[in-house]
Image (tube, one colour):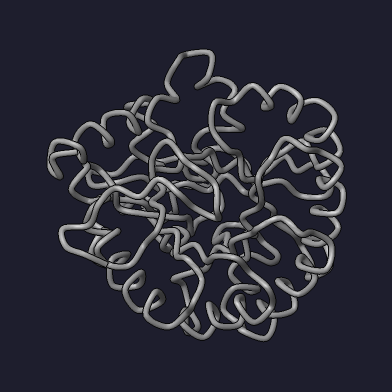
Length: 291
């Protein structure tokens, strides 16, 4: 890579408008942002997590703003894969950018089962396989911390689809580099680095956690150096592209992650305040690089 890095616009052999993806769980399936005309500068939308059966998610409160970031404990709430296939993906066909579907499961086998159902649709480009959700009672981080399990999940998915897929890794235990290598061995076309970091906030007067599930996923611009380090480590260890996720608040952050080895960069929490953040990030990057 040359430095400073140029702004990439091709990924998995497909032309993208930008290297900025909307992170899973922050933009639904993109329909609302499309209606609000907020998808300018978006390279791709990564959908809300989809499981085989519908999930209500964790009991509220599930979101908590902190002075430096956001704690979330949504718990993979979604209507289930068959509802997504029949009612949501036909609407998402109008998106002006590629769609990746984030897939989660409660067992190793469920990931492939969800993908098998979604294969009936022509709408989405590929998948992000979520072995790293930190705030559900079963699965989640338990999958992502064990390279052998990551390997089995990736192998199962690769057997049922020819579309590209990324495996979303966890920073909350285990060796991320080894898990990344296992994902690639299993057939992954990319790895996403990484999911949210474990966090918690306690009411000191009562001694109780403010969120019902107690421990949650933490996102913050302050995490950027932690994500940069992990992107650098993983990108130097695997042959497939790395998608970064976490810590982005300005165009310079995206360029730093690209310099660390990322090929695409996800933005998430910033969308909560500025749903048109991708366009702002692209404008900032173009100004910085002179493009």
